[in-house]
Image (cartoon, rainbow, N blue to C red):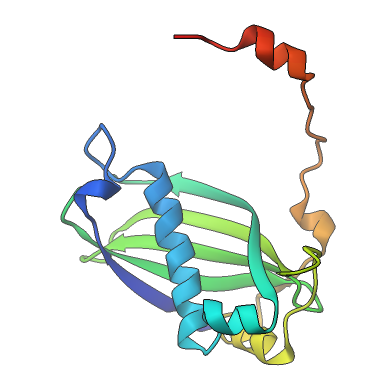
Length: 170
């Protein structure tokens, strides 16, 4: 199994009012790690634009173990743990470690590839699919479908007048 690791130095702008890394920063670290991996393999944003392909996350779940503070160095790992047969759907695992190798957070993300013009799901190129499989354990990678990614509960929309009459004014 391959693992890709990206290094980050925690900046003042990465911390929240509690003076530890804010939730959105963890998401940014993980998305930058994914894109750094693709870029390192010749599939950066410019190359993806040329073939009209974009990765889109459908969900990302975090578990936090230990806080990270400003001026710490962290390492974010990337492993692919599941894919659809055609490679359109992917699942990856990120672990966030400090410079001592202690894990501070973990994230599981699930996403799809879309055609940048039609905005519809599509399979990646065979070359890109094989690059993703390089970061997967061929013995444990799961084959998934879109049903494995979708939430079982349907979202509930609100009527517009509800929002207009019930928002908090300050």
